[in-house]
Figure 1 (tube, chains in turn red, blue):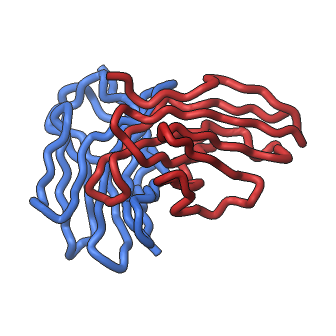
Figure 2 (figure 1 turned 180 degrees about the vertical axis):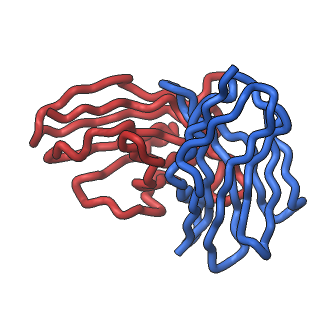
Length: 114
Length: 114
């Protein structure tokens, strides 16, 4: 049973460019959350998708957007990249949105903005 | 708003000695609390979770944590450290505004010495 997978593993972009990160949830999971982890920091919640809609959002600008597909996979898009967007981006999946359902994390995508 | 504070950014122990990683939480309602571990270049793994059942929670790899409402604490312990326990540990609180958004602490780096 495959766990949460993310692609690509690493990515280098230039300031001002746009990037798309992808996530496939654990089999049977219907909820996907995205987190940003800057170097030396704890992960910060970006947003959560459930039933193809954004259900919760953290304190991130509109440059960060996402999508969830009917098969529950998800994309994170970041426009007009800034140097400060350099981070590890983590995807987590769960079955349902309540606190009783454990979130499983993928290995992350390391984004470097130059 | 809810938050967690990890009281130590770095903890160093000798192999075979007890581990104590300290976490205090702040929440306006009964929280769900978690400990996650992150090994270098790997994703986050759930160690244990508290969701208003037993206050002493047992997790994987011999770790356990005790929820103490009077002290607003959720400290992580292990009787005997192993070299493989060296990693970054995050205390996490969940569940604000519906959904299961996770709010992470800043992390504690555990070093295990021979």
